[in-house]
Amino acid sequence: MYDIMIQNLLSPVVLFFVLGLLAAMLKSDLKFPSALSETLSIFLLVAIGLKGGIELSKYSFGEVISPVLGTLFLGSILPIVTLLLLKVIKLDKKNAIALAATYGSVSIVTYGAAISFLDQIGTSYEGFMNAMVVLMESPAIIISLILLKVMEQKKSGSVPYSTKTIAFASPATSWIDKDVLKEALFGKSILLLLGSLTIGLIAGEHALPAVQPLFIDLYSSVLILFLLSMGLTAGERLPEIRKHGIQLFLFGIIMPIIGGILGVAVGAAIGLSLGGTTLMGVLAGSASYIAAPAALRTSIPDANPSIYLGLALGVTFPFNLIIGIPLYYQFAQWLVLF
Image (tube, rainbow, N blue to C red; front, side, top):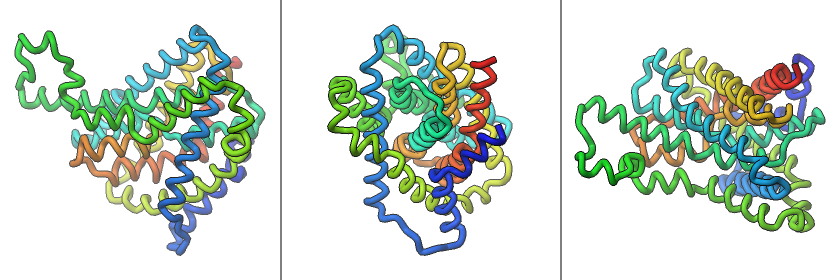
């Protein structure tokens, strides 16, 4: 595992992230225009979606049903695991729910870095795993918001529905604001992923001549630029974490390990390959800093962004990029190969 970790640390993807991190910590005047960061983000979302759709077109429904169910299970259980862990820290309810949504959802860029890692060490994976990224985005956000409402109702002791109404109303859709539900299901990241995935699925391998020169051949190079930008952002967020003590910092490291172990266990249980099991661990061990924060700004405005965004970007993202991905690969080796 040590050799794999060193190999990952010396990859251009990680080194450019570290360069951005150092630039921020040294107060360099290096800046990324917001429009460029947005463009790079859109590129990565479309590239992952297209590749997932093209690969998914090669499989039958029966071959992907187990990974789909496994992904939905992880997206549903991780917010609960997060809340149980935060109960030890005694974090306030709204910030705890915000972290549950953040750590139950997925980091697209961490997933992209994991693909580069697997390609670098020559480990193959199921192409349909790109589709699992789309499925992992929304469940945790929706379930976290439902849990918040359940806790609020339990605290107030009130009953949200009459006995006549409850038989005909859906608590989930009644408790969650329609704008929040719209953001969780059709926000920018999910729309781009789902849309490009569908296009890739419909077009199949016939789309390769049109999409390969830009979205496949240049993927690693664009990821490097984006991670340089993310290094700058993460470095700027680090001071915010220090304000909240060592317990939250440790949570930002312990939670991805717990999630990664759960993800790897699910991947191995449903019979994924070594690469696919590793990616399932990455999905469960990462934390969202795009889809979840966008929904949380609307649904839980009292939650502190410096906590859920600062932890996801300043602690968990660097941890996964440097240590987490090789660690999940090692876990997967233990379960899949032995």
